Amino acid sequence: MADASCVSTTPPSVNKAWIYREHGETAHVLKFETNVAVPQIKEDQVLIKVVAAALNPIDAKRILGVLRATDTAPPIVPGYDVAGVVVKLGSKASKFNIGDEVYGDINEESSLNLKKFGTLAEYTAAEERLLALKPKNLSFVEAASLPAAIETAYEGLKRVGLSAGQSILVLGGAGGCGTHVIQLAKHVFGASRVAATASTKKLDLLRSLGADLAIDYTKENVEDLPEKFDVVYDAVGQSDKAVKAVKEGGRVVTLIGPITPPASMFVLTSTGSILEKLKPYLESRKVKAVIDPTGPYQFSKTIDAFAYLQTSRATGKVVVYPIP
Image (tube, rainbow, N blue to C red):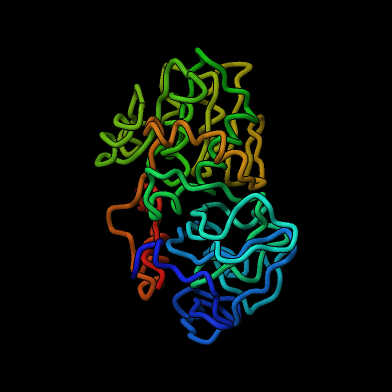
């Protein structure tokens, strides 16, 4: 595709998108359609020409129908994460200009009031408060990989009150969120010691991101470690193990239930302000995007991208690019 500078600022009325009209397995229900109406923007929204989009596990859960109790009914275009170019402004949108390169997680609440029109399309709409200007040194692929994962990492660390000089253990350090928990804990929150778990082949990655101790979960049980930690961030749904690795009086946060007390769980509220706060760290490359080496996946290969994501073996984020 042409680079962002060649993107037309006059959006069409229809576009290509991945869409599902019933819940089920992604491979069976997610379909590529070429005549989907471009979303109409509300007064506080902008229309974005999508250049790259990242997949999240919650996308697959949503397609399956796990969120149907709080979700809107199909047809739905999935996708939370976007990087692209602003092509149209709502009547009260004033944060960006047409032509600005932006990125963000377009669903303000990760499981409530979800948009029917997500990011796996040529165009998508989002409230401007959910977006930030893309750091100029980041590619669209890198930018698309960040929002939901880095915002979740940051919000979790804030909630458990990680402070300078404390120690932290990250369960699932090589995943989309875990790779950012390591980096933010070390470079933003000032942790004195960062430990993280991954499989054997990914231990070097953990060290390169700032982990002082890389633990091979195929060979060691974190609950049996003699060392205990001030904070444990569980990104894989093992709070039963996490609570055994924390110091007495320490804090555990988990992203996936069931929850073993005293662990706590939270639901991300997406906001562009976190991305803006982290911009200096992204520009200096103290915090960097981690893209799974099997990608990026072409837009036409989105089903393959989901299939790989659902193996739970992805390193960092799975990104779809280019979007025509």
